[in-house]
Structures are given as C-alpha cells and as structure tokens.
Length: 78
Image (tube, rainbow, N blue to C red):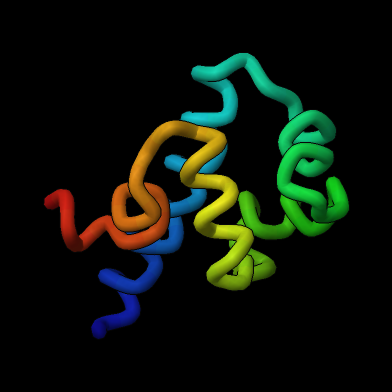
C-alpha cells in the first residue's frame, strides 16, 4: 500500500464515520453511550488516532445501519 493510498483510505474511513453519524443526527456522546465506549475513544477513532476493536466496529455499523466493510474498508466500494 503506497503512502498516498493509505492516507486516502484513512481520510475516507474517517469521513464515513463522521458523515454517517451526522446523517443520523447523533452526537459523539450519544453514540459512545450506545456502543459503550468513551466519547474520547470515539473522537480519536473519527480523527484517525485510534482504531476500534472488531466488536466495536460491529456495534457501530449496526447502529449506523451500514456494513462494517462500507464503514471501515473502502476498497470494497470503489
């Protein structure tokens, strides 16, 4: 994976996390309570500073009503 591709992937992943949460009119605080993580962990995941574990990725995808692949693995959708 080249650096530019990796950066693009990180930007797109973060964009999807934030975009979907905002489409559903949810705050970070609301989402973090539902999936049982701290708000700061969700914020760091959205900014790309932290990676969520698989269980939390699944919870987040279910809450956002999308697939884990769409939310976290853009190569499946380009």
